[in-house]
Length: 364
Image 1 (cartoon, rainbow, N blue to C red):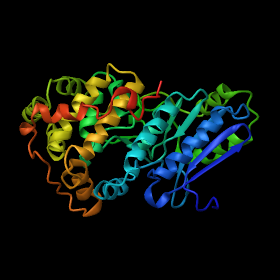
Image 2: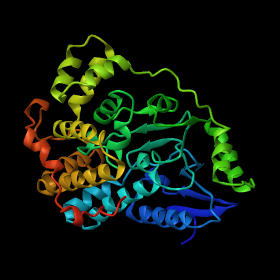
Image 3: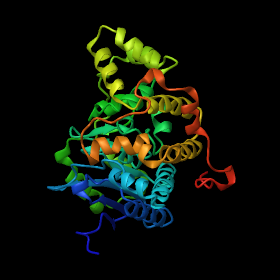
Image 4: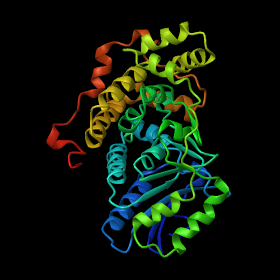
């Protein structure tokens, strides 16, 4: 396969392992093959003393950079779920193992999160030792919009946001633009997009002494100061610190601010069931390490596709409405936030596997 056809291009230039996600028509959405290629490259470079650091970027239709990764391939999820394709199970097991590998990678791993970086794209960037955004960056975990939950370690990294910002971002799927990601603690530095190609080329051409020198070099080109948060932090903490989703929506509906009214409207469009599940996820994850969080999310994603027959799954229905039929009118069950029962939520957290048989039992 030529590099023009490869969906992941990996190369060692100088002493740096360079990864380019190369599926521009799909906004570099991850396929199972891409996950396997990324995992193989990172495992090889982890154990290769000639590679002292790793950098990853996406491409767009016009050239380098411009779209990092729009997430997992949700059209594949939809088709595989309805067909009973076992590759769906492999996808999530191997994706979450890749997320863990990145978070625990022993060498600098630098993610250039230019353009869209959502869902699975956050999974391969939030574990980076240096997370770089531009004025074109759009970061989000928008899974409640498709009847899913912020997986790929989303429980872990969103629950570490200040106060109850994690609940807000997880439930609403709010998009963070550029420097807003710095304010949220989900990026480490900002650079103008037009400067990226030259900086990328310098990684290959500079005689770095060690991995720390690579990371310092990139950091020296970044602005690290975070602007004031564009969301009302006190309101976010007061509202999204409430005990239940119903309490949150009631408080927002009674609120006088434009933010409160818009946020209430957003939540009413999401899957009521998955809003409850996601709130429970983030709050459980706050007390978990990464490996336990990923195991919990693996249990949860299994339940997303198997608690009900596939055609009746909230996730399959959400993807249908957004990406297949594109009618944007999902038929959520239950239809109202107030009608979700506690046992419907707890079912997502019951593991289908004994601990020793869990597909992610080997994660440290």
